[in-house]
Length: 365
Ligand SMILES: Cc1cc2nc3c(=O)[nH]c(=O)nc-3n(C[C@H](O)[C@H](O)[C@H](O)COP(=O)(O)O)c2cc1C
Image 1: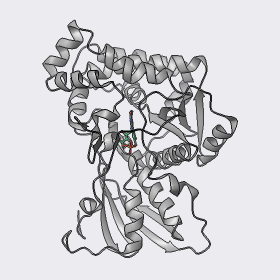
Image 2: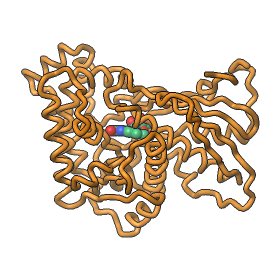
Image 3: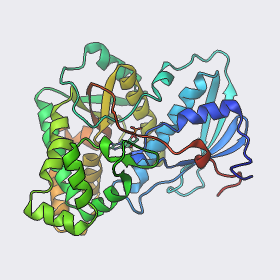
């Protein structure tokens, strides 16, 4: 069956049209849909670990796929359908695959988070500094499924988290392995991007963004700027330190059981999406801050992530600082981290690939 010939059931189409707005690291959308019939499909997931230094063991991709499944279930609930998902345990870890079925459930309450699916978007610019209200925090806590809790970083810890992000950014911006990733995931001169992140959504001012565009074309330029012209300073101030201070709080989602297997990361992704949608429903904006957690795990497991001397040591220092901020146990069991606060929705954002591009013919490997 070719993409052109595929007739999609209207209900299934409605669900998938919403589900594809789930967030994914760098907007990679690591999922394709094989429709079997009106109520059944296979989700073919993949990861980017072979070329993306941030996608350690594919875990961020697996979290994204978890977010997709949660969004699907929420969308289905508004149509009185209950979603059943079963992971194929015989596919390799690099290709998380799920059989999905929607069953009639006339008594199912529509999930109110459905209204937030399209409005949810990452906001990387300054947010309001007013503290979250007790009601907002309570809604966010309640949003989490059993097995997860929020570790808040507020007051003086907000500044400490901002400084952690500032130092973390230096690592990211001076490492050729990360430069390769940044180069391929940013769409320049763009307010919107279907398959990447538009540069205007990154949070830097127009002059700095323009300079970044020129410098980032070539690693030698990046290296020269970093070495002689404090090239990381303006981007790090604008994209890490200032937003890190301009927010209500930073937060860490902590799993009761330290995540280990793919299913743990899929479940964490589902929890992340409920938390993020709840923030949106409360009129709050959010930005994930995942890379300190990722570098820390490289360090903890003694795995080398860069050929550049000194990077591993810097990451080890960051990892110590992260653990000092939230406590060793919570740092190691953290599945998601970010900043949050009241504010305007982002004026520039990632869009998505059209649904027809995400459909694959029946019998796809
Ligand atoms: C698992 C995961 C990790 C992410 N990590 C970061 C991050 O470290 N920094 C950041 O600014 N955005 C991060 N994002 C946000 C994505 O870049 C964003 O969701 C994606 O580009 C789609 O944009 P949208 O959320 O506005 O729809 C992450 C998203 C996911 C799902």
